[in-house]
Amino acid sequence: MWVCLNSRAGLKGRLKQFNSTINGKTKHVGADRFMYKYQNLQDLLNVLFVSVRPFICDVKTNYPEDLRTMGKVAKFEYECFATYIEKFNCLPEFNDKAKSHKLSLQSNKKEKEE
Image (tube, rainbow, N blue to C red; front, side, top):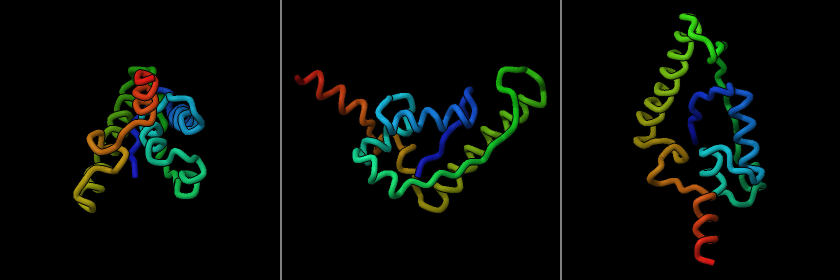
């Protein structure tokens, strides 16, 4: 489980970043954590389920309606975390930075050792 935070590029941009990372281009921290655990892409694809909750707004404006919507997005994200923690007594696996490692850091470490 992993809760994705808001992106200036919007939902389409966030999903594109995730897809790029699971296909070998490190652009998305959450997907980088998935790839540490699921280094075989097919293993990840066998268990991957994506659920989204879109909010319509223009993140590039300062219009009150857009700002309020962005506030709703932030509130929704933290509500997701709170609900998950109430149910499982911990953060979602790939949101827990202390317990979930990044594949890119593993690769960088190997390169430095060589």
